[in-house]
Image (cartoon, rainbow, N blue to C red):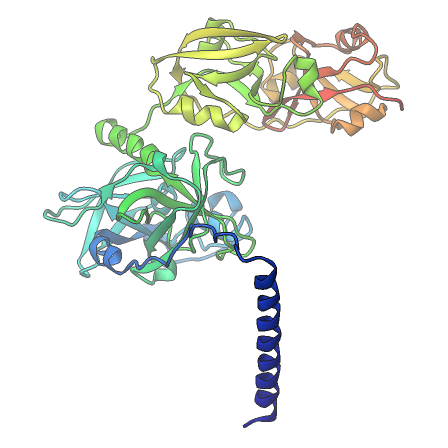
Length: 489
């Protein structure tokens, strides 16, 4: 016997003898040991039968982008890179383009059949900008697919192939998913068809800060997802589709343990509209919202940080008609609690324009309930550039140095006439600690709009000493309240 193996055997024998002595001593002290806890988890699942049954309904999707213009290749601008490449490789990923400036190449993803007559579901970013889409079945048959409709906000695309008698997946209920449940993904990572991976649900109702999809309460999993898995099904242990694999969190383009799937309930709502009209309509309140920071709780008269803080209201919107104001805090929508600002858009977007809804708000510490009729969602606000030269000093207790904007600059920034004061310098420590910086535009102090340095100084000077100032600030394309609590400098 090898010396090291003998040594290990001797150590094991000594350890076993010591364990036996310890156990005997413990038994002598207590003749009535406590009953062991009940088994919570037993065994591991075998997904063999599941894969055999559902695998034939999973397909590979190839989208040709700019295939007629690929004779001359050069590097494109970042804005010309198709979404699937940006999602997995980041904004610097080069992709060839043709002489007409269009990018070209093949986008590879996954899809799954949802009806026997040839409807296929996949991601919007898989087929975005495609000249031709091909679907390859598990039996190796290939079809040219028609894009019935595609929706960027939900990242869902509906395809149609001319075939009948196809295997189709059963649609499950993603609302019943709970963290810790087993889930399975089938797809074509890196072109490897019918690849199977499994894991558990990490979280539900997740807002993905790395995707511009505010209407999707993502399912987060630890299922291994890679490039090419996009659009594939996420399945429960009954073989039912509960989500569409859509995103990964990655610094390298490869799997890092965090994957996101679109709940199938959200996807099927989009499918229903895509079939009927070719596009998706969503309800909209007409407010811009944000989370509530710790320093703002007392200023807003709240018991805690739950809710969505309203920082702006669109003219003529459902919110304006219902009487919602800046600094209102939305705590419930149709009876559903709003814990974070990200909880509200999926609830609103799931309803059709014209639907009636009730909103529970807190205004100045007092609860109210308002009724409104939803409008239709519009395009997001465009980004806003900023620039200004600093004047000599400030005349307000927060040490914010501002400069007035002329009408031309306001027009460039997308502001109304007489709206906003540009921050050019921060002399107060409290304002700097709150995160304000030169280039920000202050739109209001509390609910009071400001459009001049005199109005800003007056509004700030009118606040009681030590009271937190709620400043409505525009930075880039984002508008939010910033709580500034005066402290000793």
